[in-house]
Length: 442
Image (cartoon, rainbow, N blue to C red; front, side):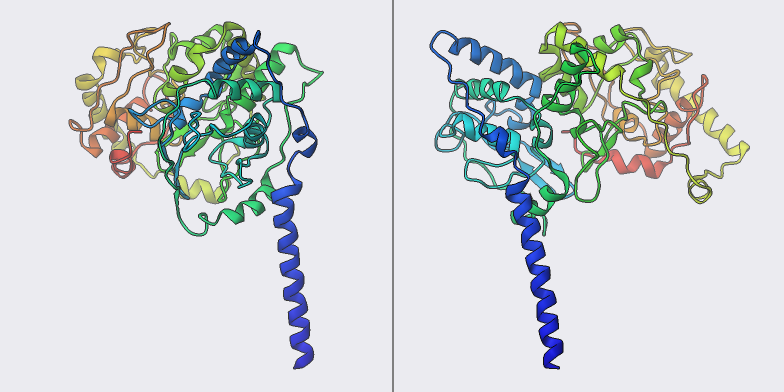
């Protein structure tokens, strides 16, 4: 018995030692210590103003304001809530206020946050702050952003704690997450690609952090990397960020460059428009970028390798198959057509062609035919507007029909649109619609 207890104690000790080693690795070893030795760029009086201007541009490119500004609040003063399946993250104050912001941070502290995901006090930051992407930002760009944040008006606004579920509220466990999923590295040029492609990759995968939304995540909130654009649902916000490589969703390789450039710069092109969280990205960030940088992003995105969606096996097909008789389908189409004629035809037209650059086409629109119906259902229920941009200062919006149409009526008209004019997709049910009726509007 004594021997058994000694063996058990040894096993427990080894297990604890192993766990401690992994945690230490996650906290300290994964840090990019070589990059941390990089010297901050100390501007002289002649170029300090230029550095602030450049920093302001880079902060726009990173869309920092959207997350760090509460609705109706002061810019960058924090307080906006990011709802996730792990709980609510509350963005901190990043104005130069010494008491509640980052006024006592150095350029090195700021670089550590972006590059190694650690705060000034050494605390590990939750990856809701996309440092996995920002890690690619160069030290020179980090210093420029820091200079801008030290220049903006100070706002004294105390930070609010995150409200996370157990065990995600145990910050020490982030060491294990970092050990498994985080490797900081500054973006390195791909010699096999053009300078424009490399600039686009730096913006898309680094500052622009597109994969933060346009990727699926595992149960611990990790994706397949900064270049993962496979699409994913934004948990609890009930929006879906479509795949940018799947031909059945939005295969950007098939888009013409001017078509994609107009959508990202203006929020609308001749065929479609952005809405939901993407409208905020265009409004707050993309429309302000230079034509050169936007062209670089388009070049990179259009070169993204197409990914073929995995075919379902026989069991998955059986479980997902809709057993709808032809008679039932005819009834759905007839009822849906009547609803479309009453509520939709004036804008989107009898053939679903819409009006170029005003009302998006429904015919052949992949956003209407995706397997997950979150976005079209939300737009029908709550309406929506493309962003107000320089290229589209008076956007035409989609009125809300949530108070006019029942769940079943929304399901009928959307099922009709998904299966007419050559469109082909599954029939939507009232239960699917009801899931999004009370979804948050933020």
